[in-house]
Image 1 (cartoon, rainbow, N blue to C red):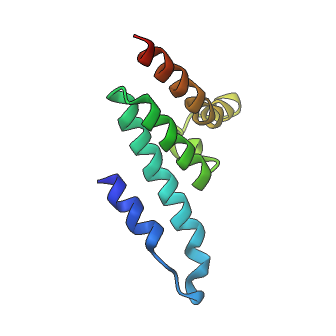
Image 2 (image 1 turned 90 degrees about the horizontal axis):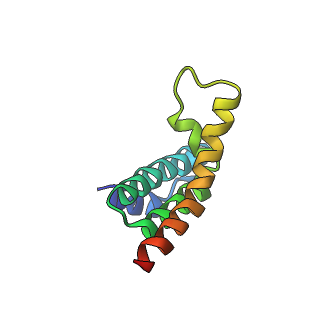
Length: 101
């Protein structure tokens, strides 16, 4: 599962000679966290989704670029980036509304 892969990557210690791969590890943790957040969102676990979106952005602030389409340029590209940031308050709002029912 994504959660187990994230745990393994977090515990992975790179040798000093391989420190240049640190950013790759960080980006991959962000990518897996984003996928996990989307899974939680689909099954309406909005609080967990918001948490995992936050984790994804912590590890890769430009995570939205990893999910772009080839035709995304200009404003569409900016929208992809902002969409990943807007996901957190959207999930929190949906979590509040869902809990109020």
